[in-house]
Length: 481
Image 1 (spheres, helix red, strand yellow):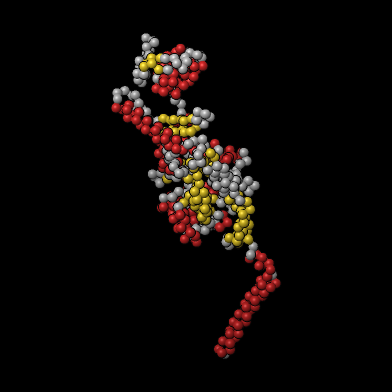
Image 2 (spheres, rainbow, N blue to C red):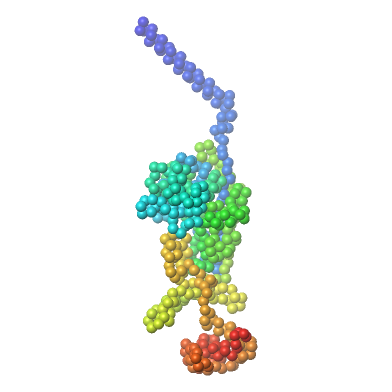
């Protein structure tokens, strides 16, 4: 009896296995023979998207063709939506922020929230407009606090379980990705300029960083960042107000306007960089990218090559500019030192100045120096350097040469000489005797810097004789002058 039971169980198992294999076999026939073409089409199906190719910015040269602001090859960390899943992006962002922070390199961090001494969140001082833009984007009440903003982002971006600092850093990147309309056709630049060593580390760990790609880019470079920084000007991230203005003009990025500005683009902020923004900014190109169902790259075809921005030539002579800057610094410092060594305040309060040299034939600017000044190379890379400049009471960021208001001093003497000659008050042989003190009036007797004796107009200009021009100016009169 027990032998029959064992045999029946064996037969039952064989029948079940046979049925299973029959089902698998029929399914295999369906996949490979009956509907083989359809399943092949599905398995080989690719997703096609158009991706922007950023154009290089134009260069700025002096009158002799020497570069003042140029481009160098750099590396940027870019997020590609096609290869980044919703589940992996927070981990990718955290690994990269920690890597770059550890290596002392900069990633795009524009969230106007910081952690205070008590471990809570607060809006960054001086960034009220950015905080208002954040609140608006998150659709919160106008009076929302930094803690409320972080709570919203923690819930929306899935940041529970991270430390406050980690959550804040990931939220900063996710917020910027949201602002810049991160999509398959609009990659996001996480870090615009990283070192080759960092690139090597990232490439060795690509399997742990899905969606993060290294792209060869052009980065603004200055042969000498201390030469004419106020003239060259600065570039930086587009502000909320600038983006809104560009949007009104129809100059923002879209698939129909590849050369439009995306939220994470850079733009000229001051100087030549701002004044010639439309010339320096190139025309972006595009490429069609095909990816498989697994996110692997199938093909990439350039449909429109990017066009670099134009080169801008200045009338500035960089060698003369260097001389002007060095001479100005030496004279300001010398005047201050002289004033401190003497009684009174004759030069002691001299902390700043400006100088401009013009071509007398066409009045083009050959040099325009400001003191104190700054280094553009540091300005664009070190946030702490900018904060130091902004807090300096001597205002090194202010362009005194072109924007400052100063009493003309001896630079007005050629005007008096020209007017007096034109009105025939003097001629080229007219003589005025300089005894250092002008004694025409009893109650007001201005002085000269030296005893020049008898001088004509040419000699007076050469020696910058005050007495000659006091007397000539009095005789000419303010109306004729």
